[in-house]
Image (cartoon, rainbow, N blue to C red; front, side, top):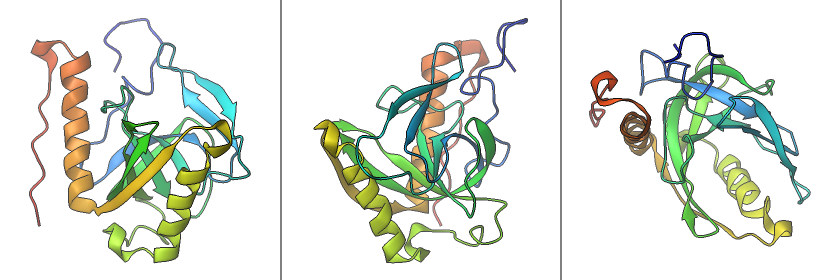
Length: 197
């Protein structure tokens, strides 16, 4: 729900993260799998903008977007790559289950990505941790992010992939960072750390 009556809904600020977070959360997809178009949320308006066309001969390997009501160290909502069978339209939202995280530096700045599976996709919903994915899929994801800005002379370094427990902790941290950054104190919700298994 918007803080301001009579204003348009904003996918970052008004969409619920979901009531079962961190087991599953809502993900807003900005870029469909197979696209060379770098769509991006315009943070001021909540509309979708075409940021650029990728300069390298690569396409997004999976649906890519953000987690509503989250905020990360790069000043944006937490990024998420959602593995599923189909590509979806920009700015739709779906339920996603975190299975891991990819630690990445984009031009020297931390730009981590939650790796998730579509919670309602029968082919992918059985995965619970990134270690269960075929190694080739992780190699494809790594290679895409290492290459997608190369022809723009921008350096991206993909560090390690970590499991679901770390992804859930980072997700909760990003939700609490959002609360601290955007929500008035009397309206804040504090998300508890997930229990380690």
